[in-house]
Image 1 (spheres, one colour):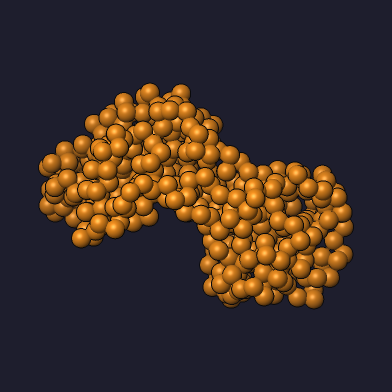
Image 2 (image 1 turned 30 degrees about the vertical axis):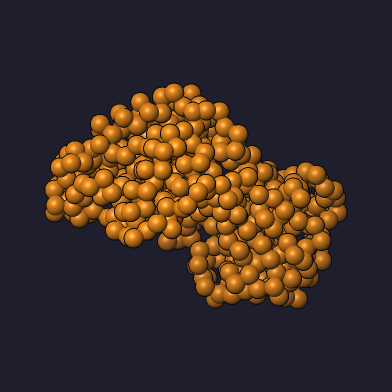
Length: 413
């Protein structure tokens, strides 16, 4: 069964429960510092309102761990959503689903919006508790999943609710995410390149193995590249790397060669004597990394190599920065990659790992074809995992189970 979308069903007069991702950043005064996640859900919410539905929106905020934490209330989000919709958005009680909530839903008029409090105030949310799922489903006639960023979480409001809601469909954010992913990974214009950076080697290496079955070129950066450098036999000093994954990186490099996939790792790097913005730094080849120093960024020669490698690509997908770009001295590699990707003639998709932050800082957001709203979910799809939310809606990414032959992760040791 294929995923059904919100525009395929009748919403008039119905109570529509929209699971959104409004886990937005707040400052010390509870002011929202970035409302892009709220804005991303507006097309779905407005469509429901235009179709004369009664709308309930629900999201989590932070990690209250099943307790009511005042600082993680959805109140600031309800106010901002109301401002963007130009209508009042009422906020439900901290208990989430009780008699007060049900009364608010019963009194909800067509074209009006109710926001539930932080879903993670309830322990059953992260436990995918059937009773909490059933309680949420009892509030609505139609469930709409528009929260791609948590699509990899088997939570009550993401997966469990679909077992009890009369009708379950996907919203426009989910639809766009799936469409762009399929365009990039299932039926791409080639050459297709994947740029993978960041520091979480274990999850990224699993994604790399799956990606080898799909891409023509693979570019590696960030702290995870240190594991590959170690696999080649280079000294990486005090750099972060995963000793237990060195054999996996060697296997991946061999597998790429056998499959004809061009895999690129750094040829030079920016190193520092400590992890500090005021540290002493220098550029060195990967063969000459000092034993007491650590790799903080790819070097200028690597940036040029990667730019050349991406020049003829028709599709580029990027997850994870090239270095510790939050510190100015180590931001050049990531910012150079932003410029390279943005200035290419390829279809470009950015997803997770703070990559979107780097793109925004360079001012190239408008020159990227699509910026995914999900970090962990995006990476999970690249890894070939079945997303619980997508599976619950009756669909798939089209990439599950694609690893051919023995996995490099079965050959460790």
